Image (cartoon, rainbow, N blue to C red; front, side, top):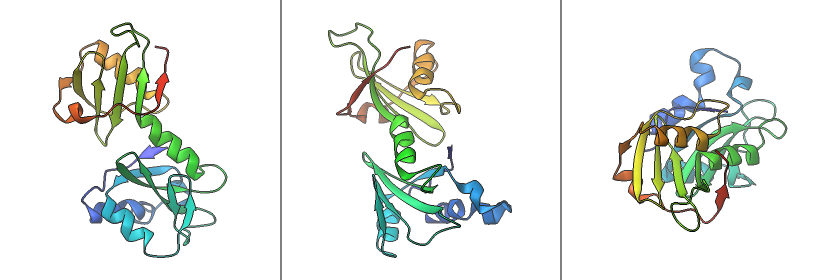
Length: 184
């Protein structure tokens, strides 16, 4: 999976992402698994464009890019996403699960509170926000988790080594309904 530049409030960027293969001259099949953030306006526009094929978390365009690869539009929490999926290797639910991992609430098990240390994180385009609900610390980390590393491990490494700055924006992160217990 590869996250492309955000298209929130930027319709031109959305179309640049949709057509990246064409603009950069590589086969359309290489778009599989690429995804990016969009806004509700873009989501609704595409929902009303053609009859959608509904899937977990959203819908796929009935018009295919190639073979079985389609643009897939998802809503995860309060955010909207678009990406390319198929029905075999990068199915819509796999992309949805991947995005969920980038926007999650987890419990480190550290005993800052009787229930442990509860942290919500949100990975954006070029930065990552976190809210430590147990300690009241909200931060922003420059960058995003590297491919192949568990996002919560990366966030906690930066947090533990004071590689973040305080963030008013991160203070708005709400504790998720589902809290995943993790091992660090």
